[in-house]
Image 1: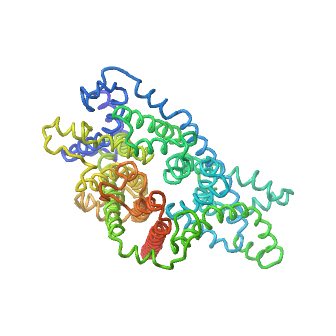
Image 2: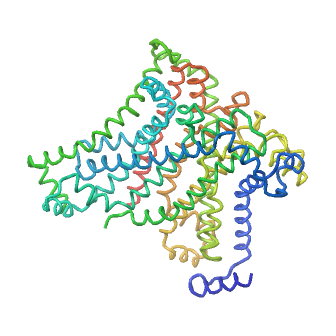
Length: 293
Length: 311
């Protein structure tokens, strides 16, 4: 406590502007916000508590009591029941492929639109924006039908292709505006040195927007990881399902008891919390480095 | 200078050839886009004008699906439910996020230091990290009627009489879903608004404070006008997300009980895959698309006018 107070005092000393009287209302606001933060976190705590309980413990003590010990039974039960390793791998494979392919496609599109200034580019961009706001409900049945026609139904490839296109709409839009401001003298200089367009793209353009590309990659990865409707429709066999689909389907069938349900929730949320912690810095760094000087 | 060069280049034949040379880079994107979005989108409009079970040849029936839709009470009800979902996913989170962002930036950050503010922000943002389906699963279990955590909590604090089958009772199901959506969504506007408020000159607040403006007045006359662009974007983004809501409905209620939480998105899904009334489902999806596109255009207009007035 003293340490905290000391620290605060030193912080306040460092910033004279902050040296102000904290009225009782400021404390009231702090307490209120801390309570709100607590409420937001309670569901997470309850999930962790119950994922670590045995079913007997749950029926005896109810959902609010902390677990008596660490029981990983319901977690391993659930893991084996859905083949969670495979499901996790599917999600990683689909999201990872989409992140890479969609960024690649966005780079090609944006190179033609932003630097090449291809005729009618405003129309292309407007179309892409439209595609981005389109509800997937308006695409899902025809896509399902077409996938069946070309034998891609219930394959991860189909989901990868669909999301590569959907995500690249946003990527193209963003990158085109970034590349629209690309310094022309740099391109001229490279051309005089005898570089062709392909070489200019990979040696000049891509390196200079790399921070933006890595931010896009993170976005695409997380967005694809969180997708539900199209993967739900496309991936019917358990071997192909993503984390969200596998858990959503089990939940929809009302087949889980309480501890297994919380184990499922815990396993579903751990990967995303991990991404959040890993990617947080990329995002913060990338967004500030996004502008080309 | 650069624009002058490009314009000059465009006038010559060399410039036109130059531009054509970039065309190959656009071809894979255009082909994939046509196959994955363009063709399916047109197919959807076509099937909405037919009667089709998903197999065999679609039978052309013109606008019959739409006129049926117009008379379908379930369809209108699903839109009313969606209006409430918009309140829960867009309006409440935006309003709440605005107040919280202002409190955290204006009061907590300045009185208790930026670290306290960023810890509180992270806590409130946490649910946004979850895939929305997982958030739904967490809550369907917390809200379970027999020894679900919410009911147990109510019993523990002596309010056992309020314990309820939150998602199973048609009277409370929709409000429960709205509550869950607020929990999921509020972090998004908060984070966007807080980063927007970084732009605001601290001297503006100080000046207002010296003039004796109350916190509420500072909020209304300094904070809100300063981050108006962010408010527009967040409202548009979250409203569109609310119109597309599917995952949470699927895991929380499956549109039930008795259609009490049905939304257009889920309604089209059941028509596609449960009732195999593909034509009717396509008509619902097309109406939903029109609404979303119209909303986007209106918002962008408003935003454009707003920016011009500022200038």
